[in-house]
Every structure is written in C-alpha cells, then in structure tokens.
Image (cartoon, rainbow, N blue to C red; front, side, top):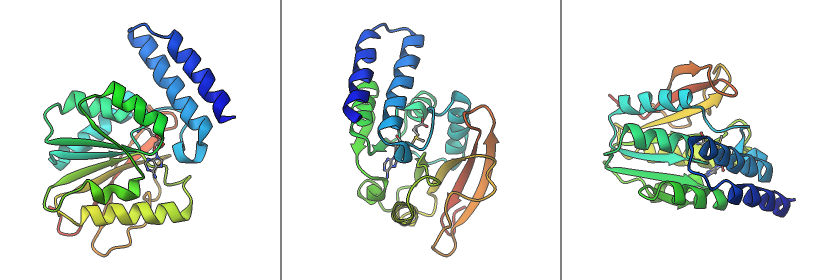
Length: 214
Ligand SMILES: C[S@@+](CC[C@H](N)C(=O)[O-])C[C@H]1O[C@@H](n2cnc3c(N)ncnc32)[C@H](O)[C@@H]1O
C-alpha cells in the first residue's frame, strides 16, 4: 500500500516539472496527500494550512517578538513559506518533521531552513536556555495517541520553561472550545487567539505562555 502510494506520487511529481505557481501548488497537494495516506493519524489533516491560516499564525508569531522559531510538524511547508517570506531575517528557524519523505521535500524547498528529521518530543535538543523561542506547532493533538500527546506536550512545556519570553503557537481544527492539551506545569496559561474560517477545516489558533511571561 505505502509503496503504491509513493510510486503514484513520484510519477505525478516527476511529470510536474514546470515552475508555475499552479504546478507548485499541485505538487504540494500531492506530497501532502501522499503523507496523509501513508499515515493519517500522524498527519491528522486533509490539506495543508491555507494562506489565511498561515498569515494569522505569522501575526501571532510577530506578537511574541521571538527571533528564534522552531516549527513543529512542518509538513509540506505551508507555514514555513509564510514565516520565511514575512520574517526573512530571523536569528534561527528550525523545522522539525517526522515523515522522512516530507523532510526531503522541505530540504529541497527551503535550503536555508534548518530541517531536522525527528519527533517533536526531541525539541529539547534544539532549544537553548535563555533564548526566547517561539514554537509554532501543527501537531494533530486530537488524533495522536495519549502517550504521544503526553510526551510532546511535556517536551513543549519543558522547552518553554527555558525562557519566560517563549511561547507556543498551536492550532486545532474547529472553533476551539478547549485548548489543544491541558498544561501540566503550574503557571502555564493558554490564550485563544483567533478562529480562521478560511481553512479546510476552519482552525483555531492558541498560544501557550510559560509562567512570568510578559
Ligand atoms: C496537520 S499536518 C501540518 C503540516 C503543515 N504544517 C501545514 O500546516 O500544512 C501535521 C504534520 O505534523 C507531522 N507530525 C505529526 N506528528 C509528529 C511528531 N510527533 N513529530 C514531528 N512531526 C510530526 C506530520 O508528519 C505532518 O506533517
């Protein structure tokens, strides 16, 4: 099954060698669909983030004033592209992605971005103490198993604890009645930023602040 999907994907991909925006978009859609078919629970979405969702996330990112950004679950780079375009002179931009084919895609597409093939729970390896860091996460917490939710949320809270100016920007699908996960450390607080209707499906952006965050 996996091999069939990859062969179909590669066949389409190799035929679409044009450089137009339309064929770029089509290639991205095929790459995303291929990943979603290979591992639906890990991808947890039917389409990449829309440009409206990407723009709204970048607005929240700008509000943090962090100059170091770690993007988690970068996928085909829908958010990476918006971050690179809007904030071209960040001190550091790291993209962490678990799927090896998507990692290859990201490295070809964003040669200047530090792309790490790893699980989000390894974020501690890239975040440094006393460096204000914005974590921008697309992890599908609602479709992940409980063990992965616990490991990744604990790793995020631990990373945010390294500098009180840090923040996690995370979106979930729907109108956002509840935060993406319950913060387990004391003093952490979620704020609900906004709901973006122009996305499939509509998504709500949340921001998690560590204690004593300004
Ligand atoms: C909903 S997709 C979002 C992709 C992209 N950021 C976008 O907005 O279009 C979630 C991504 O997270 C990745 N992912 C899921 N679990 C992960 C984990 N534990 N560590 C790293 N990446 C993970 C998936 O492979 C997938 O690319």
